[in-house]
Image (cartoon, rainbow, N blue to C red):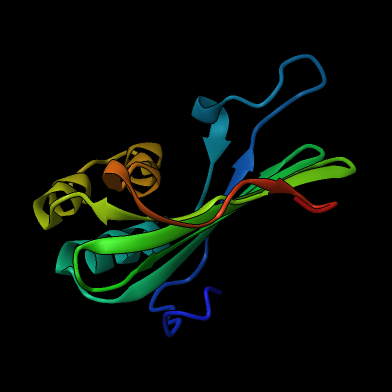
Length: 142
């Protein structure tokens, strides 16, 4: 992924489907999943403070959001997203930021809603980026 860190995927990919219809566009609160064990595994990895890579996908009507977080094991992680909609997409940015304290992830693991637990993973970072490896770009190039 980053050619900097060895990828280690201890958990299955977290997949959410957007529950949409022709009238109402997808909203975060409409996401559905049966990936509870993958969410629990990801929160356990983050709470341990150890190295590990976590992937997720949100499948939407005409595209998807793919995300990846790579916990380095030193309290920081690299992350990036790729968003595809119809014939367009954006990639990045690839950034390194400090992770929330391990207790944050332990507390998140006690939440009953899959969306709440997923929000903890997507909101795993605190503070400004420590490093930007590449900026946001379209699939057509920078």
